[in-house]
Length: 97
Picture 1 (cartoon, one colour):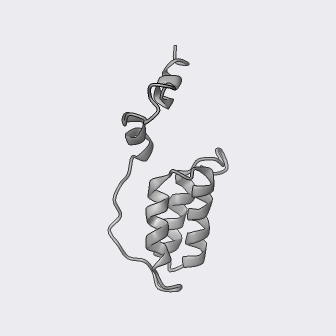
Picture 2 (picture 1 turned 180 degrees about the vertical axis):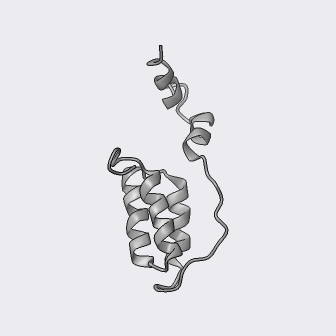
Picture 3 (picture 1 turned 90 degrees about the vertical axis):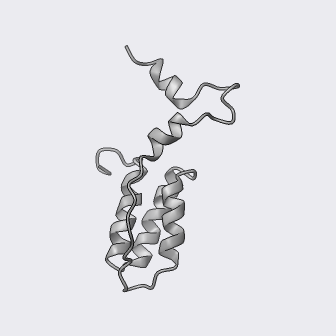
């Protein structure tokens, strides 16, 4: 995914979880930071960074993984500025045939 779309925020976030599961804390944190550099509001990476920061390097992180559909859920929520600017979903819909 990263080769086709280097700005895909979920890819480095997911890779961070893989590294955490292998006990590679530093690599996991680097990936989560990369995800947050792409989208500072990407809540799953913020939450996972907090969890990974508490792990011990070399000891695999073992936890229950929750499936997240962050962007569809985010698009469905009303924006605080929804009256002044169309939502991302509204802007995307305007480009559909």
